[in-house]
Amino acid sequence: QVQLIESGGGLVQAGGSLRLSCVASGRTFSTYDMGWFRQAPGKEREFVALSKWIGARTIYADSVKDRFTISRDNAKNTVYLQMDSLKSEDTAVYYCAASRLLTVEQRPNGYNYWGQGTQVTVSS
Image (cartoon, rainbow, N blue to C red; front, side):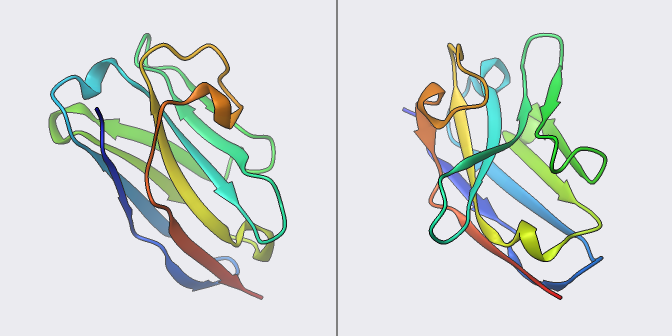
């Protein structure tokens, strides 16, 4: 079992920055694919970014590319999401997710473990 705990959400003005963190339990964090998703009120949960453990490859949704950066520190069992140039449409609950055998990279059903979420609100 893997437990994920997100932090770092909050209220920020448009154009500002936030850094989300997700700490994972367990000793095999380095072999998990780690993703970030978000869900706005009345909308489906959507893919934001992914950090693959093989090859250190990263993938981003088009809506956040060049503004958000996903990174991981395997020694600290932590994955980060640096969010810059925030827009009001980035307002959502952000979730960290993990998978050992990820086959569907950008859909929620590809992930086995989820955090509780952290609220990000961007005021315009």
